Image (cartoon, rainbow, N blue to C red; front, top):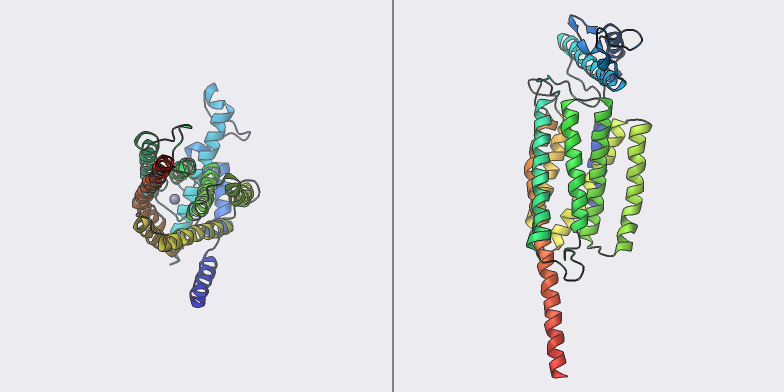
Length: 355
Ligand SMILES: [Zn+2]
């Protein structure tokens, strides 16, 4: 057992050691390229239409409605994003000529664009996961309120974790939505929204894992578990958004929360007699393999498919399997509670007759 823990600690240490901040955007040549591009509106032979500003930030040759502050801001965002793309491509061409391997820029590998999509494969796979998440949550919603019996007086569900799974569903749809947007167009704002949404989802999943695996039903105990984690999550999200978007730190936080919840579910599936424990095992094994894929982190094949895109692909069946576990958990808990309460009421009736 001690050896096992040592292995976990060593592997976590290796995971943390293997993660670095982005190398590409730290390069002074790349930064210089961006600065020049935003000023001149061109990189090498390619001119960037979005960067056609006058020196005071007003758009060149545009009607009045295109001078509106919001539109100008949108153009500036696009200008920056296009400059980042063309400078990255130029830098990578030079690196390739020198026989150097590709490096990451702003936390991402250099991808070839397809139409408006910056990372077409990851963007499409994120959107598909969003559809699967919505479908899973909708099936759960219909089951909880229309197919399973409700408590006679309050009209609430017998399943004690309904509300928590609703929050989980909303947070996961929000995270996959911003994931798809970020892979479509990577601005500072979409990046922060994606990172913040993912942290919020991972953190809440950890809270949910603790509450469900320890079967915490009492409101006060739930608050005691959730409060410190929520405080930490809020601080971390504020730090990322308003102090520094530290990629290395964020990956460490996400991996720690990810591993913690996988351990909670894995141990629970091992000791419980839950009828759907095999689905948890499948998600735990699949999720662990997906994390390994993410850690292997190879540059995009042909400029399109990298390890992150493959990780997105594995998320689609995992999301389906996870919601199917939630669905069966709600059915299982409801039938256990209703059986118990009908047993108690008939036992009560019998004892009244005999007394
Ligand atoms: Zn992604």
